[in-house]
Length: 125
Image (cartoon, rainbow, N blue to C red; front, side, top):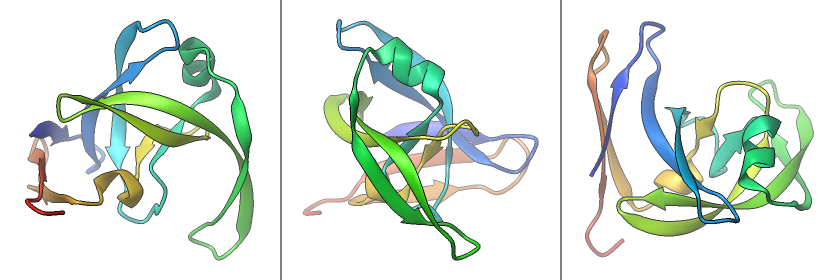
């Protein structure tokens, strides 16, 4: 189970462990965003710290309907106590966890200040 909290701005957030090319690990806070269909967004500073190179350009439709290109990277994270390879898009906003990363899980959020956030794997997903 992955756990987190709802922050003062009403955003469900979790601590996410990134794994660099050198195997070094560190945590960042990431918001859970069910309106984002991708897996993960990270700021360029985190991408540079991971030591990974661009895997190309990926285009996503934003909430306003516009199609926007993003640099994408093959990143490695720890997810539910195992290593997982994901596509990370560069965005200088707060790191986001999208539905692509949540697929096959149950997301539970107590929407209140300091409320609990829990992500659990679904059986047979």
